[in-house]
Image 1 (cartoon, helix red, strand yellow):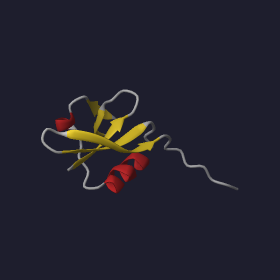
Image 2 (cartoon, rainbow, N blue to C red; image 1 turned 180 degrees about the vertical axis):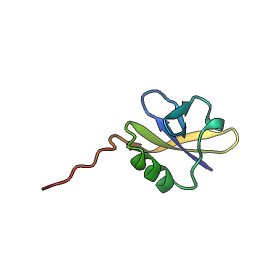
Image 3 (cartoon, rainbow, N blue to C red; image 1 turned 135 degrees about the vertical axis):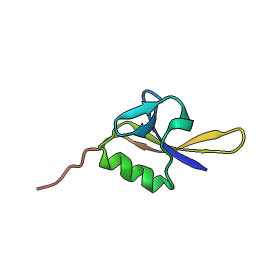
Image 4 (cartoon, rainbow, N blue to C red; image 1 turned 45 degrees about the vertical axis):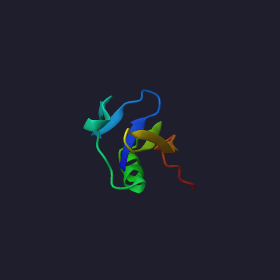
Amino acid sequence: MKVYLRHAKHGMYYCGWRTWTSDPTLAVTFETTVDALLRARSEQMTQMEIVIREGNPPVEKVVAIIESGNRRGGG
């Protein structure tokens, strides 16, 4: 099983700071979906999907969608 971040609008996979690829084999893989979520938050990414890719042939499943990286505080 591999975990990726993919831009929901453009379908490009995350492969490093502000770098994207259409080829999932070049993308950063994460140990867990939580790791992917933490990376997306740390880089304030928006419109992101957390994708799990597994099987042979590979099948992709979107397990979470990150709409906004903005945090709102009350006060």
